[in-house]
Length: 152
Image (cartoon, rainbow, N blue to C red):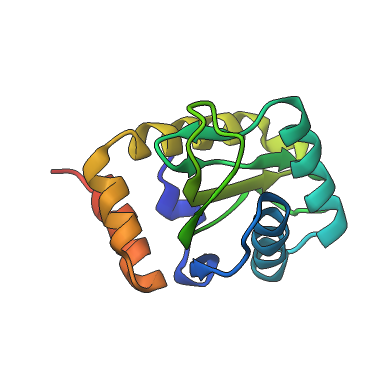
């Protein structure tokens, strides 16, 4: 599974405007619902309930908030970055600037897990994180991800 299979320019927001964790979740959820369908409050609740179990801030300035919602027709991904780092209760204690929100219905559980793993593997690379942070537009952000996924 490639992230670019789930992503389009319209699903990337650079910069995100929210300044705190709840705001980021709501801003990304709104983008996801606008682009992929679903019910806004259901998506927010699903992601917040998952965050309450354990923060999805995976370290190195990256968070992958996610959840399962029966109102979202199929697995959907939106992402973006913030100009300023946001406290997100990440496992390394560092604030976050790169966000990937992944939501889908229960029937997409296998794809959901694969997509989470794919995001986590890609953003482990410092060069990609730097390129994503330097992206001044959705096009640059998307291109960085597409380049990272293309065969060498």
